[in-house]
Image 1 (cartoon, rainbow, N blue to C red):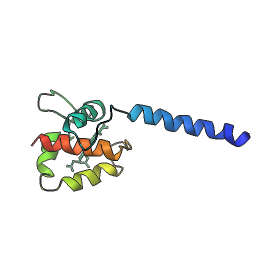
Image 2 (cartoon, helix red, strand yellow; image 1 turned 90 degrees about the vertical axis):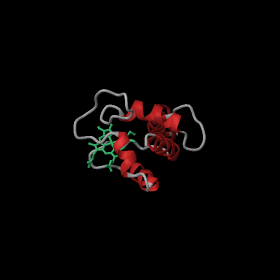
Image 3 (tube, rainbow, N blue to C red; image 1 turned 90 degrees about the horizontal axis):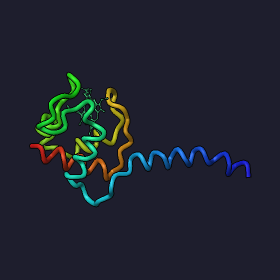
Image 4 (cartoon, rainbow, N blue to C red; image 1 turned 60 degrees about the vertical axis):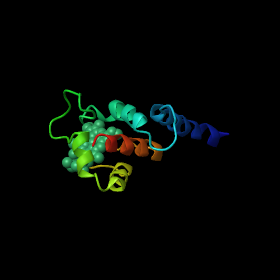
Length: 108
Ligand code: HEC
């Protein structure tokens, strides 16, 4: 009994993250979905769309990132799957990463 009770906080934390990260699910790297994730999670620091007026200084715009990884979108996906030294680790799902890569690719 005690072990069940003890596991509840872990479970609720996991559920909380699942809910926070849950965006309306659609399959296969959709740019439209990536744009929603980007404006929600990335726009505080990055300029994520061309008509966004401000973000943090010294953070590359998504359009710049799109150019940089133009020939290597897989590398971009790998970058997003790994915790970043400056960026917070957002624990993006594979689906979210695919969506973001599709969206960033669409900015080229
Ligand atoms: C708290 C601020 C912050 C947030 C939020 C953030 N980033 Fe970043 N990001 C940075 C900074 C700062 C850099 C530059 C790091 C460096 O130059 O070493 C960066 C770099 C990157 C790069 C690498 C660019 C390159 O030149 O290789 C990618 C890709 C990226 N971010 C994607 C994202 C995505 C996608 C999100 C949202 C899921 C996001 N970032 C959210 C601050 C942030």
